[in-house]
Amino acid sequence: MRHEFLEILRNLNIKIENDGIAVINKDNCTFKIDLRSGEITVIKVDNLNQRAKLCIEAKSEGWNNSGLTQHEVSIISKILAITTNNIPTDLCKQIKYFLKTGYGGPNIFPITNPDETYRTSKRYMHNLRILFNI
Image (cartoon, rainbow, N blue to C red; front, side, top):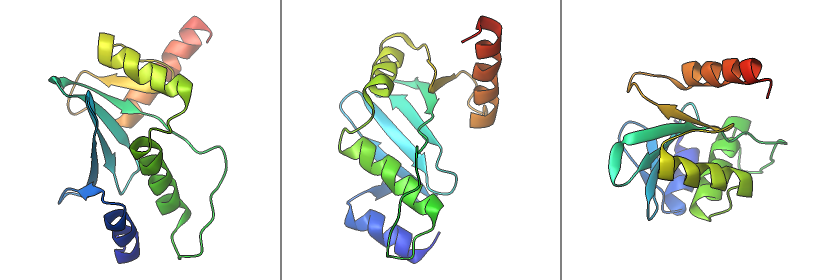
């Protein structure tokens, strides 16, 4: 990871684990953002086995004058949305529903196997959408 990118995250007081994972603790859950891939995992505080991949995608490209790549801008945007409680309302409802019930939604994919990747869980949701015509 580039020094400039990490420096911006440090200036935002974002905790970064040694393996390149940004950690954001909230009252009832922890968000972990992989700084390489941009994948977001949400983990319920009182049940560490209840976790899911969260899909947040930008509707448009951001800009910057600091030399950050588009991918880095996207990751910073996700982190800021989480830290400032600026997650879209429909996604916020899905997260709350997941934390309460353990079930996913259109943008949240429960992880039942710790080795499960975002790609396999996204494929699962894609197949459900086809099956139920969503």
